[in-house]
Structure formats: C-alpha cells, structure tokens
Length: 452
Image (cartoon, rainbow, N blue to C red; front, side, top):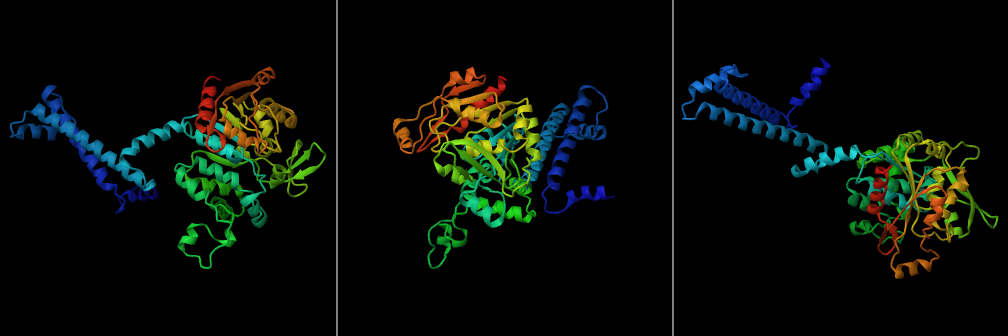
C-alpha cells in the first residue's frame, strides 16, 4: 500500500507532469492505431488496435486512402509521443536544475555521461597549483578526487583554525571552487574577502558590497561557509566538506589528507627549527628536513580512509603542481598515504613547478625537486615527471629574479637516468605571473594515460 501511495504522488497538482504523460500516451495510442491501419491494408493481418483501425478505414469519407491515413496517424502519433516525453523530461529536469534550457538538455546529458565514464584521477597537493590542475582535468572526467593538505596556519585559514579549532579550510575552498560547475560565479562568491581597511561610520549597502566589516576582516566567504558547515555537522570536518561539495554540485570529490590537526616542522640547514607552514615559507632558509607533527602531543596522525580508497582505485595519480615542502609533501607525510601510492598500479605523475620558490627551493633543478621526495619518503611514489621547457618573456623573468625566483632548469636527462619517465613541453600560462596552463597540463596527463 505504501508503494502505491508513492506512485500516486505523481498525480499531485502543480508538478507539471500529468499533462505530458497524457500527451505522450495519446501519441503512443495514435501511433498504434496508425500502424494498425497500415497492417490491415497491406498484410490483412489483425492489427494491435484492430477495431479502431477497421472503423477508421470503413468510416473515412474525406477522400483519404486508408494507407495514407495510416501513415499520417503513425507519423503524427510518433511525433506527439516524442514531444510529450521530451516535455516530461524537461519538466522533471527543471525541478532539479531551474537554470537548464531546452537547447542545453541534450548537451548537458551527453557531457554528464561522458565525464562520468572518464578516467579515475586523484590529485594530491594544495595551494593555487592544485586548483589549477583540477580546473583543467574536470573538462575530461568527473571522477576526480582531490586530496588536500591541511597544515596551513596563515591568513584566514590560520585565524579560523585558532578561533574555532577547526582544520584550515583555505586550500579546500580553492579546490571546491575549481570543481564547481558554475566556476565564475562560485569564484566571485567563495573568494570574496572582507576588507582589511577601517569601515565607515555607517555600514550602508555600498559599504557592505565593498567588504567592510571589522569582525570578518581578512576572511574569505568560502572559509566561513565551510566553518559553518563544520559546526552544523558536529565538528566533523570531512562531512562538512562533503556537504559543501553537494551544495556546490562539484564535479568530483575533495578530501583532506587527514582530519587530525597537524602542523609542519622544518629543520633548516643552519640547524634551526621552524614550525608552521607560514613561518617556514617566510624563513628564507634552505630546508634540510620536513616533518608533520600533531598539534596535540602524542596524538596519532591518521589518513582519511576515503583518500586511501581513491588512490587504490585510481587510473592516474597526479602530485602537484605546487610547493614541494608546504603543499605536496605534507600530504605524503601522513602515515599510509605514501604506502598507498607505492602499492597503486596507477600512472603516477609529478608535475614540477615552473619557477623556484624563494626560501624553499632556491636554485633547484627539476631533478632536485624529484630528489626531495626520495629523501623524505625513502621510496618512489611516482613514475613520471612532467617538466616545463617553455620560457616566459624576459621582462617577466626579470621581475621574478628580483624576488629570488628563477625558471626551474629542465634537466630531463638526469630524470631519465634516474629511472623516471620525463614528459617535457611548454606548459606555461603567462599573465602578470608565471603559472601552469590548466588546459595544457590536463591534455598532457590524459594523453600520457592513454599511452600507458
């Protein structure tokens, strides 16, 4: 009886379904009658709608031949049925997505189906490099899992971490924005940052648009949303990210590498020890060794189970692009992550940075970036290295040189001699900064996976 009530709900008024069901049914019945007329005329066999067909043949006084009448009814009935079904599908789709337009429905369905059958890709990292990679890959597949570092202790993320005792949401936010369907609008909203300047005497609507607000200053809206989602999910950060992903309708999954509160600790070559991601980046000293430590002494750092499962099931695993020490390695230092990578049979690609990072990778060649992983993990976790060989314009390189950042030397021969598979090419996107080109990167990785 309960199942019958569920089906009867389709008859509720106002859901705009009944009319299209009736129209499609009428068209189908007309189609059957038309085929019945044709069969009766040409084959003499009893048709599906025999009585109606015979009645139409006998009582047709408009001078239309029975065969012509049957053909008209068949074609008109089929068209009416298809039209009704199309309207029914569109009506149901608009309930789920009010922004869908009739001309976009087939394209949206095709794109969704094609992307759902794409490669299973896991991307590991943090910062802007990870979001760049995701932005390109989502054009090829929706089976994407981003495993994101949660060791950030600077900016808005650092403040929320201290004030609300939650994991830093900044890198998570960037990944959610990159994977969102309506990325332009989500970028404007999620990256909106309340201004740092003093507010006027009265906060009118114009002031609010400018982002004034003393209690919220420096905070990105997306960080606040994730923090609020965490609160309504009883402090479950992983669940909060899942729920935010559902709200944004992202293509793929975003996961923290661990839900244990952690921080970075770096031993420098001069013997000093620096703690915290922000402090390490600002120390401007050469790093000898990096460790991941729990915020609470003695607490065990545990990986997220879903992250381990995603790595095990992946066709491709991409590390980077991004800072070796503060974006990629923190994920691999979580116990279980690097072991899962070593066991994985996926194609594993490290995307080397285009430029060196002041205070972290000063003077590093591409091969020295690779060696950093070997030194810290005591094992190989990737088998291919994507290296940029493009050269940005001289004026841009000079501007970077003034900040002690130079183009990473693409010593491809050393990478090959060490047993890795180098993939070289021009992967640079030049604006006022030097970044990887999301489209070029994703094309190279998908092409590499196809040749695996």
